[in-house]
Amino acid sequence: MSTLQSLSEEQLSARLGVLEAAYEDYKSRGLKLDMSRGKPGPEQLELSMKLLDTVDSQTGAKTLKGEETRNYGMLDGIPEMKDMFADVLGVESANVIVGGNSSLNLMFDYISQAYSHGVCGHPAWCREEKVKFLCPAPGYDRHFAVTEYFGIELIAVDMTENGPDMDQVERLAADPQVKGIWCVPMYSNPDGITYSDETVRRLCGMKTGAPDFRIMWDNAYGLHHLTDTPDQLLNVYETAKACGNEDRVMLFASTSKISFPGAGVAAMAGSPANIADVKNRLSFETIGYDKLNMLRHARYFGNADGLREHYKQHAAVIRPKFKAVLESLEMHLGGKGIARWKTPNGGYFVSVFLLDGCAKETVRLLKEAGVVMTGAGATYPYGKDPRDSNIRIAPTYPSLDEVRTAIDMFCVCAELACVRKLLAGR
Image (tube, rainbow, N blue to C red):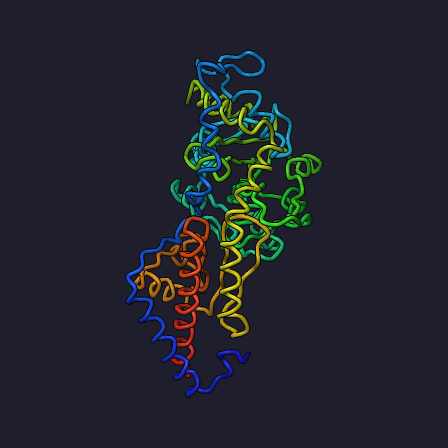
C-alpha cells in the first residue's frame, strides 16, 4: 500500500471525499460512546461479586492469626494482605503498608509528606527554592497532576521501547532540584511498554544531585497480562538495594482493576527507613484503614497466585477488545505512513501516534460524531503534547460491538485529520 505522503494532490483530494462521506455517515447515527478512561467493563465487575460474601456473622471477622478486623489497630494492614502485596511487589512483608482503596491516594500522601515535612530526615521540599520532577511521556496524567498540585515543575522525558530515555534521565537527575521520577514500569500507561533490565539498573544505580531523590514506582499493571508470554520486569527494590540506594524507590500497587475500582485494596512498599517514616506520618493521619475490606480480599483471593489466576478471567473478557482495536488499526491505517502503535502484552491501553499536529483534530472529530476519547495531550505534563500526535485508546469499558464501532470511527477521523494536514501543506 502506498503511503499517503506519496499520493498526488488529486489522489489525496479524492481520498478526502471518501473519508468525509464516511465521517458524515457516522455523525448521522447519533452515537454516544465513551473510550476516555481505562475502566473495567460491567462484565469484569461481575467477576468479583462473591468477594462481598466472604465476611459475615458465620465466617467471623478475624485474621488467620486471630486479630480483630472490626476494631482499631494494625495501622500497616492485616498480615494476609501484607504477605499478598509483598509477593506482588517483590519485597518482604515487613516492608509493606496496606492502605485504603486507592494507590493514587498513597502516592499523593507520600508526595505531600515529602513536600511539607521531607522524607527520612531530609529537608521539606517546600523549603527549596525550586523542586522539579521527571515525567516520562507519554505517561499517566494523574501522576503528573499530583506533583503539579504542589507547584512542582514537571520535566518531560521521552519514552523509548525500553522505558524512559535514560540518557535524558541521568543528565537531568544530576540537578539537585530534581527530586524524583514517575514510573509505570510494566505495561506503561499508555504505551504498554515494560522497562528493560538495563533501564531498571540505571535508574537504581545512577548518581543523583538530590540525596532524597525518589523513584515513584507505580506497578499498576504488574499482574495485568493479556498473553501467555507476559513481559518480565526486574525487581527494582532488590536492584536498588544492591546499588546501595534502597531508600530511593517507593513502590505502589492495588487490586483496583482486579477486584473493584474504588473498592479494592492498595499498598505501598519501600526500605525499612522509608516504611518507618511513612508509619510515623500515618500515626497522625489515621487510626487504621478498612481492615474488613482487606479481609474480604484476603479470603477471596487467598494469596498473590489467587490474584494472578483471577486476572486471567479479566484477560479473557478484554482480550477480544484489544484484538478488535489492533485489527482495525492495521486494516485501516497500516502502511499509510500516518500512524504507528505498539501491540501491548498487557495493561489497559493502546497508544497511537499520528502525524504531528493531528491528535487534537482527531479527538475533536470523534467528539462531534459521538465518541469521547482521552483528551489529546493528556498523556504529557501540563496536558501539552509538543508534537500533538499521541492519542490514548481505552478499550476495556465499552462492549465489544461498541469498541468495534468506535475504533473504526477513530481510524476514519485519524485519516481524515491527516489527509487534511497533508493537503494543507501542498
